[in-house]
View 1 (cartoon, rainbow over the protein chains, first blue to last red):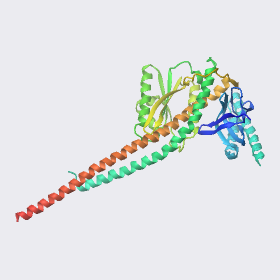
View 2: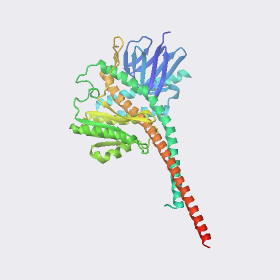
View 3: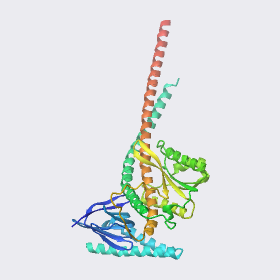
View 4: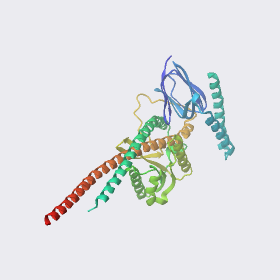
Length: 138
Length: 292
């Protein structure tokens, strides 16, 4: 299968760099898969599970807050959080959901409330995805 | 002439100082390695962020609706200077050189009739700027209790700046920090972050890619720009941390060497003095014996 170069970068380090066959990305407006020869594309991320497939199998990582850029050179994802699903700190994740709930409760106007609700929904969806990813492993 | 005891005490005290500076140098060397690694690890993110943002910025035409973080307010009356320095001293001219660069900017801007506001990150810069520009300093952020810098710290600073910008408190923001070139060379740098200045786009080979955006360009930009700000600040803080340790290491190396020279000189004086006293006593004894 054709491969393309993929880089996953977080502020503190380069998390992944190499040739891959397919990457499934949780985009803000829906998941999308990237294969070799994808058209140039920029999208923001929502919190969720990113899957990297290469000849050796699949790797799952939890990503949050960032964006993806597909260019002729390949796919680059910048994410503020990028950790393998197995290493994800579940407690910290639960706290993040709590924070999101608190943000909904304390929103001052409608626009802010919508934003907070959207963020909370995304976090909850990510929680479901994580549970699935966890179950698939066992 | 100082007595022997005084000389001995002085040598002992210089030796004690030398031990301290030597220890500080070694600690700085160890910290430097870690700080340098962190600074290098953060580089790819900042570079790619800048490239992508540059691409998007190049592909949209500025309009009044464009995010203001991108195009600025259209004025340049009020300048915010973000001065990043260290929390500690004893690192040579590290803090002073950043402050000097900032001060040059302030003098120039004030001569042009602009209003200057200062936000200090790090105690040392605040201490130095306070003397002259107490009124202009609007906020001080210090990371004294922070053991290792994380991205969240940069996000905090960035959020403060964005909030002030949205409130219309300033038009242009410039970041001051010290770029880490090598252990012996750190370059104080000024960098405009709002509106961002992108390095000239490399001449694209072939037709420039036309991107699909999801969501719309404007939405992506409004999300990306604050993030870019945090990234640039994070990078500046890490470069600063590496520079600080580098500067401290060479400053302490110098201090250790100076102490060594001083010990050598004082030891010679001590030996000469001791010899002179012995000779004097001998002469006294001999002349006393001859007089009999």
